[in-house]
Image (cartoon, rainbow over all chains, first blue to last red):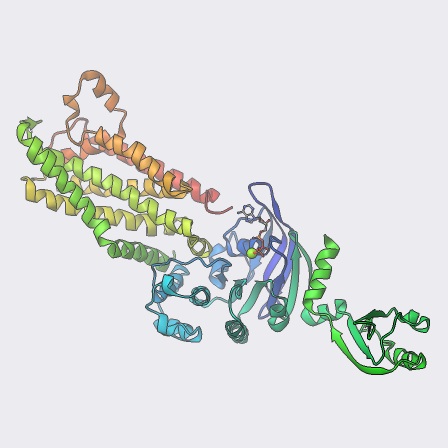
Length: 308
Length: 253
Ligand SMILES: Nc1ncnc2c1ncn2[C@@H]1O[C@H](COP(=O)(O)OP(=O)(O)OP(=O)(O)O)[C@@H](O)[C@H]1O
Ligand SMILES: [Mg+2]
């Protein structure tokens, strides 16, 4: 598949000398949803700001839709919509006016019918004549999304779209993002919520300390790094793991009633049948057992710690 | 050329003036009217004539300039400072607009507003004193050039200012004294010779002198000099703004 956004060896050193991005290269395929994860100050916003033309890169280049973001800034910026992290809105503008402003700014002729549809999709139509300062935080966030979509971009950057948004609204937002993807829009979002990336992303990129540590298919990432754990509940508590079971590297917990066995789900032999047999040979009575897969959060925490 | 962008920026800025109508248009008119009452009628009645023109009429061009300069700077500087301050400028920076288009939108709107204010003041003045304009075309040219140059200047201040204090600094400390000492209320020839020389370093003198000449055909310096100085100032502002956009000064890091 062809890349719609192509980031090559991008670095950014801010005026104070702080290196916020360090040699980042990234290809984003048309039509995908890419989630960028990373702790505070990792450089996510900096990366997005460079692609959108708000911050100048120190080194490296970016192409959007095949065009260079500096030389052909008009073409690349027309393709891009940006929902910034901060709720930056003119407080005295009405919802309708601010959307018309955004559309015009991006060189598009007025299209009231499209903007009406957009506002209806964002459940903001009834608020169209309301001044922005009279809206709730979640509504403001949706106004920002509306502004970003007002010129029908092909690439949408969402910088923490669901920060400070309640669960219902977050679900709505995910629905909206999926709907956009279906209409062919490429979406890059940053988030601190791992479940968000897990829920809607096709690929996940992890940034820490200005470096892109890895980018991978969500599923592949989970498989590559996600170990599974089998938790075995026993009828009788144990004081210690019997020596006959030492080779399995079990962990005893839950007042001695719980044994945890971690294994790699990708390997052909997980060792589970052998373990179960060994347990019954050791004379332990099995009450229950379950398996769990590590979440992106655990993977992420593990990775960031590993690099630090 | 992104005409749509110029249109929406221009419209947005004009709408802002409309919504704060009282502040935008009424306050300069009121303050000018006060000047007329105080200087024109109360004091002016005791002053004979200046350069052959009745004092009340004589101060009209200067008063217009005073309003044009302060309003152009205030409007343009605030217009660009405020989105920078609130952060909404991100949108303009991420939009497919060139620096020319941003200028046309913001400075165009600020200049239009000052032009309107200037014309309103002229009409107000007509109520108080008899007015005749000897060279209407020149008058309009000076009016337009002043509005544009000082809106540009205000735009520069708005980009440069990091806080509200700085935003007020230059208009208060530089522009107001220059205008008051620039011959708004007197003819330079009324000053002692040394001060006449000092005054010639004040660019506003040339502006007011040229503008006054278009009304009454009396001037402190020749019209050609006035025009050259205004054009020079315009060119200088354009150069600075061009440099600011090129380097992303205080906008792009
Ligand atoms: N304008 C600036 N001047 C100097 N340093 C900056 C500037 N903007 C960001 N930084 C620094 O660059 C680093 C990366 O910031 P950035 O905003 O890109 O992080 P982030 O990953 O978006 O974090 P968060 O999750 O908190 O939004 C931070 O250490 C920040 O302090
Ligand atoms: Mg950020």
